[in-house]
Image (cartoon, rainbow, N blue to C red; front, side, top):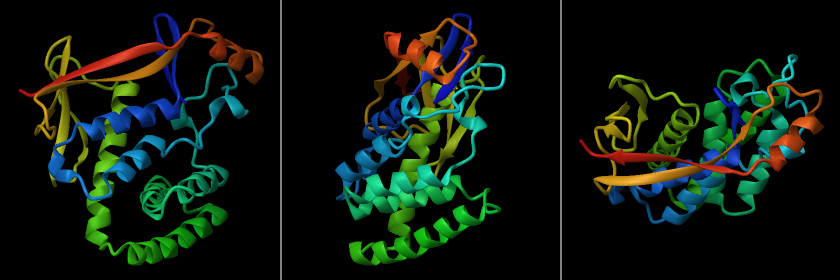
Length: 241
């Protein structure tokens, strides 16, 4: 889960909600990036974190009793395997994108022998799947660049990373080959430079939960507070400059 400390307490955004926001951003991209597997691409982006079921997990708290932000955790083999099980049950193409993403996320954890073995298995599977789909490595890289770009921008929005005073923040290199930057136009609008979207203006949304209590004695106490919260809708307006 994504955890932000605010004047009102903790703002919690689930990994699944973040994935949905990423897919909303992808849906607004220029139509020229859409492959003939566009629906599957959107599903892969939207559901790439669906194996993260925070309210069914434990170890959700820091030693001080606050909620654990996703960045405090390393990638876990069980999560990786569950992600691929879910992806493979939908389509080889979705599995291909998710496998490539897991490789990207786990690239700095090769000291874990079991995780390294999993990544080697995935590398062989990706080669097999690319052949079965009639794709090239360049096709995969193009589609994954959109996946990773939308994931990156969604995380920047969810973690409140947009800089004040018109300062730019790098998003990622997109499928168009450009390195894009996020910037606040004013208090109401954000923009991306260069502009990659089909429309000159659009809005995306994501649900979040605000929890006033700052520390918890147990995972169960935190989960109870989380489940009793009414989701609040966070909105971001984008426009071309």
